[in-house]
Amino acid sequence: MPKQLLLNDLDMYANKEFNRAMRIGVWRQIWSWFTNRCNELQRFDRERLARVMRGQRYLGLQTVPLDQIVGSLGRFHDFDRAFFPRKKHTVERWLSLAKARYQSVALPPVDLVKVGDSYFVMDGNHRISVARAWGQQFIEAEVVEVITAVPAPPPC
Image 1 (cartoon, rainbow, N blue to C red):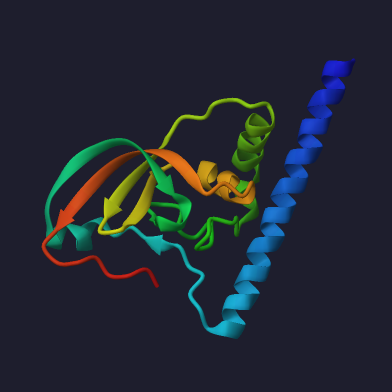
Image 2 (cartoon, rainbow, N blue to C red):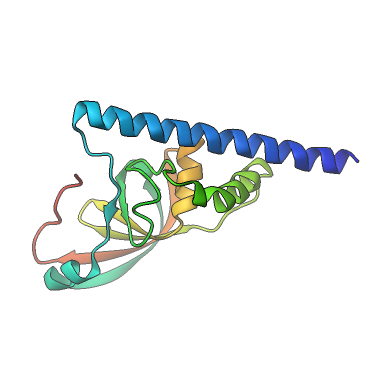
């Protein structure tokens, strides 16, 4: 019985965290309308990058500041610029990762591509979102750097 109660508590706490993260995301969107500041997660555009790419290299496992992760390969509509969730369909994966955090389960590093001083998520959008919601400043990541002929455009 105590184990079931613990699982129910995990569900409750994880749901509270997700709802709080969604509220923060909504307020960030409203604030961006009033301030005319960009709140969009950038789309990683492979075709555009291929035109200016000179090469790439594997940088290995690194600790990356979450503030430097500005975009995503495929989930750029699901999260805002700070990776707060924008869509309810992200809830199941988000909750499973939040519960893992409550249980101190070690999560694998995210996969990032570095372009200039910015990073884009190849895998790990939800892990980044949960980390941001928990106030984490850095995340462990496997990083591949793309070397370009021209500087990468600044984040929006």
